[in-house]
Image 1: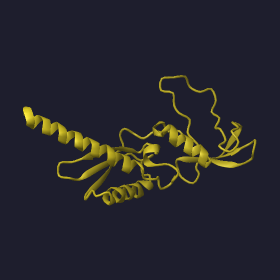
Image 2: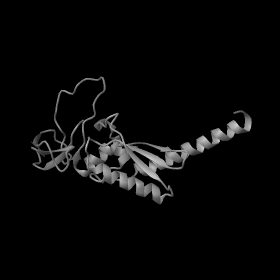
Image 3: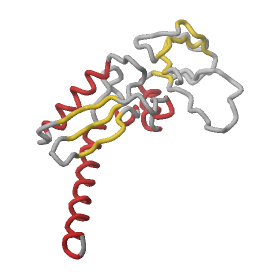
Image 4: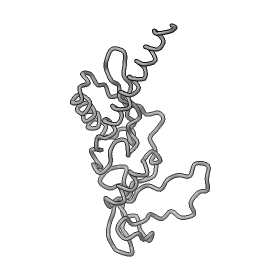
Amino acid sequence: MTGAGAGAAVGARTEQTRLEVELAELAGSVPDPELPVLTLAELGVMRGVRMHEDGHVEVTLTPTYTGCPAIEAMSADIERVLTDHGIPEVRVRTVLAPAWSTDDISAEGRRKLAEFGIAPPRPHAAGGPVPLTLSVRCPNCGSTDTELLSRFSSTACKALRRCIACREPFDHFKEL
């Protein structure tokens, strides 16, 4: 393809890319059903959006863990948001690889978790030093003097802890 034909093809692809970015922002803005303080983009489970030539849109999600019961609600919410935006056919595909990690939570997501009263997971330093402490900071008073009450809390991805300093219980989003 040369000349005007090549230019039109590039222009069409650019427009498709712009639409994919817009739709990814819409899909990513859907609140997580279990942690509505976070969006799917902030949680890091929304992996991508692709427009297909036949007009359907494919959204790729990776659950926080295999068997996550919230994946069905996430899929339905994404389908609703994109359909309301005028997309006639939306398919949400669940992928397990690459696996989701708590490192996929954005800095804004971590800030929102702490503000909501959930201790965010500690980021892993890829290739860096291993932290010398396993302490979890209390989201209420900031103390690192906390204790584990239960390895599981309201969801499988959280643990229940208590702060020794302020005596308040809190959820801790476990590192994966």
